[in-house]
Image (cartoon, rainbow, N blue to C red; front, top):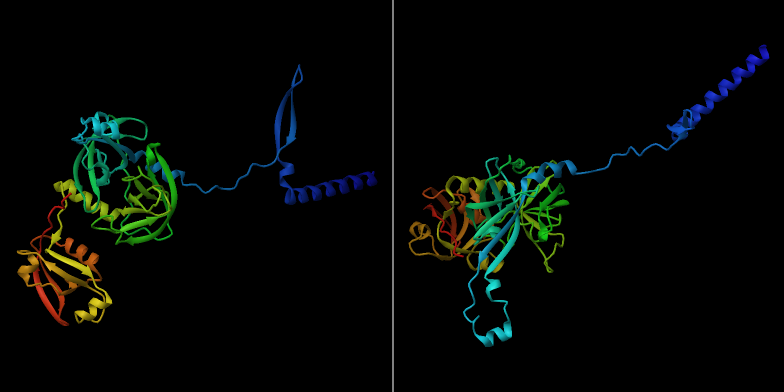
Length: 384
């Protein structure tokens, strides 16, 4: 009896040890599932070993995309174009056919926009809706409605539209100003090539891009998220789905994305948008000068020790600059207490001043420092 008990105890000990080893090294062998097998008179439960499901977490930005998608709309525009004066000439029609005929009197375009308020305000690029006779908005769920322009600012390429909807609108959430960093993940949402709502991802590759010749006032976010024609005016959002920029332009030699896209940062977009909503336009400061960047040769010619600053190349008659005594050949070094690094910085500093405000300008004239007080004027509307 004792011998049988000893054999049983040893068998249990070996089984427990084997179970521990299998549980540690091959836990999938122990995973089971029940399969019901119909034997005719009864259903028998059979245990069958199955491998564990992969429990690894998959990196995804689905939550960010889902948060922003309802706020991004498609914009379809149309406008009348002038009938060609020679369209009825048979010789002209022989060579050019009907491409300038009746069918070409209506021109269409497409882009994207972002719902920014629950009462129907949409932010987009000015170039998307500029000169449009009709604007139609398509929501992410396929519904459509007409839109009207509240106001636009060609110099920053932003415009605000107003729409109505029979259902509640979901406005986008703005990210905090200056929260974006180089290397952050961003998603570009829009309607590229008119194929429908699309999300692409990338990182922020640069901030504060200027001197691109795209807009008068530039402070672009550069990203490698794919931005293509039709994305203009759409949302650039962070990994939480918050708006960080308005997609505006691409660098391309082929017309398609080459990994360099530009977006207007939310800080500038919000400032312009608020002015448009308040007054229908954007008011900026102006003094009436033509400027150019300093070079080493110009710095030597005008008696300054560095290339920092903006050279006053011309002064408009009757302008605030002329009244203050600013002359061609002066080098502008400071506006208020803020330094002027180049002509673009000077333009932005002056534009940020309120018309009627008095500001001190630090100049260099023939190598000598000069300080003048200028009463800021209102920047004229740009000509098309």
